[in-house]
Amino acid sequence: MEATRERLADTIDQLVHRTSPKTIARREITSIKGYFVDLRTGQPRTTNILKVAGGVVGVAVLFAVVRKVASD
Image (cartoon, rainbow, N blue to C red; front, side, top):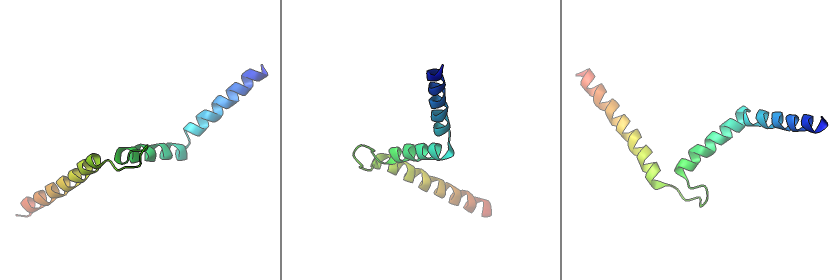
């Protein structure tokens, strides 16, 4: 009975740790960093960086064009 209680307490502690906001934030930050940097080598993933930069530039140009057309 005592061993079962200990396992249950450990399981609850693990669940509390996994669902804490700091742990979730840390996990998400690591995931995002992993998209831009190879976590094993530390080298930047230039293809992914260029994709995101291109998307940002594309959206900025789209907004500028829409604004220009709407003001005319």
